[in-house]
Length: 421
Image (cartoon, rainbow, N blue to C red):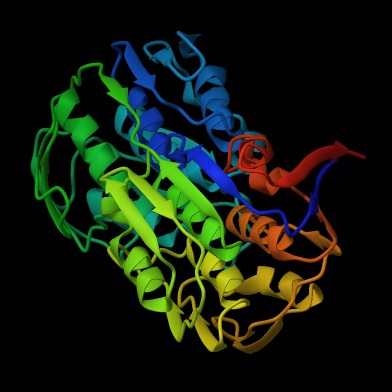
């Protein structure tokens, strides 16, 4: 099993480039299942979860060709959903996005319970609810679901139970194959939903309200193939921005879609972190002299996302006074803070969703465990701050979301290396 060994205290300086957005690539890969024509997707991040998604699609019989390192050609004309790899589906959350397009196209489907990060209860109840509203009959089994659809939409007014990114994407993927006008309300409007909606429009669907919480969609039975360049990842950009701030680095982050990070950047500025926005996709984070963060709460876009909150937790260990962290969605999202406490942080857990970080504190290198993708990235930041050597185990979780992160940080001067047991 791989581990990271990190010697902290090294100054970080230089440039780092953001890769393609993992969470935007998932639904776009799923959209290839809606057409028998060839699709081309460029700027894919070469990470575990994306490669697994491609493997599942190929396992059903899709013809896939890599045109270059990050560009792929897919034709799903001859796929068979009965060949779905149950084991792979259980390994990552993004696999749930295959349900909508497969059910729309084949009408019947048996699908395993998707897996992913252990950051709390993550039921797919909202996905099931919107598909039921649309007319699907769903039978839950021990570790899977059986879906049956007669081809007739039951409702033209779909209302989500919550602002769920993936449930919004799943119902859009489903409805894109039907020519009836349908409204989707309480829709999420984050970057990955916009990206998918634009792809579906390119395929021939008509969608109004892109970027809002109320969408109107009219699909087509025969959708076209598409060519698409996946946008750069706001979460990875936010990770590198906050990591640079935590270590007092002087780092330029390129390919950063800053328009999706307006509130996190305001929070940094208000806290005392200086930075220069060079252009709409480039930012230079500079060392700070005094830092104070009173509260950081994660909420749906355009607020601070749950995937970025863990990096604020590390930054808070270096701030003056208490910082309240609040993640109302996932009760285990704060689990990485237990590892930071082992490193010397002074963090009090108020309840599963809230913690108070008292700073500044000196962190010390020890052996810690990566609990999930974003928690693992935060532990890298903590290790870069810490005095001495930190060993991070279970870095498979980090690899699921960040491409060769150690090699990219090495270019900034970080003393980090990957080792095998």
